[in-house]
Image (cartoon, rainbow, N blue to C red; front, side):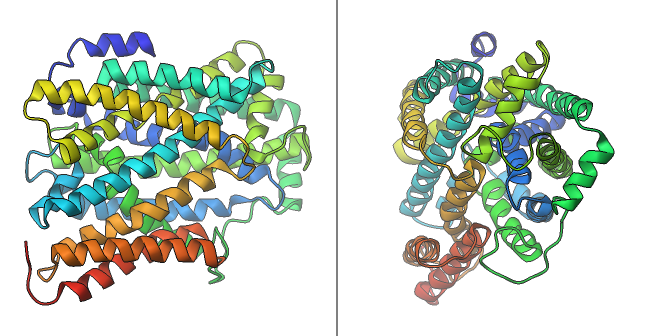
Length: 450
């Protein structure tokens, strides 16, 4: 990873190269980068655990239906908007409609959300280190991974991240398929299917309109669509990748193709969870579902294959948001006078953001909740209000005061729903975005203040 960072680092002479790779990346590489970003360490480890856990099944896949629907909306509406100007971050669009304060709030929310989410990513990868090297505690593993992540991103910029993600995708998909083959060597396919069916592992659809259930058809289709519109449509972490290509058509092809690949991958990872259930049963020597797949990798994969899979998981942890955070703070909050100052500041911010993510990973090390649920819940909590203010900006009535009031109301609404009700997290982004839009529209009145 560090060698790759040094290789690509030779060209990182301007902020446009450091943040946008000179807009010379082909669409298929962007698609692979999106998939690798969305299905990296958290997915690789956590999704099999969801299917393996008691009461787990394929209903998680309903969420991905919303992911696919949202991508078509992003390709048709959002992406042409991104390429109308010379953007570095998606939040710069907000200043074309509102005062700078709205952009600053949205950018700050993104920085907080990504710091927490990638702290979770480091924690999950540390579980793998802990499984392979029992003498290394989780905190030490998090620190070691974080340092490599910081050095790699500090030197190589977004170009190194995108191309390494292409390699990561090939490696961990191959590793997942090989792991499934090894599991089928221990458990006959027909036997595994029979065990899974008897335990209800292959249940896919749940059409009940129960807001407290995390995975239903409606929470997946509606909540998944709103969540992906926010994470892939108004989140710098993903939008930065679209801006690394030169044309909106290329970006649209990349985002749509990534959706179908993600759907297939999630199905594969869930099936691996069923195979793990057939192999281990409902009990195993782990304390959390997220640890079941690392345990199998460390203890049951043959030498060589286990090393390859572990290397893929470790590499996936390097696919961080540090460059996106640095770009956001530099372009939207700090705004240095010269490009040289901006490049220097962005590298300092990369180090600071990395240290904060290490701290988050260590702080969350004691949790037993699914890390995937934690990460997606955090994303829904903050990205919903940001999506709402983008919606608000499409109306002639919107004002800066309305946008700020809407975002505050959206965050409060999601926090209230999160802490005082049993509503499932896929609905958080729906609540946040619709509350932000509604309150912002009402407060704005009839005249725009620009």
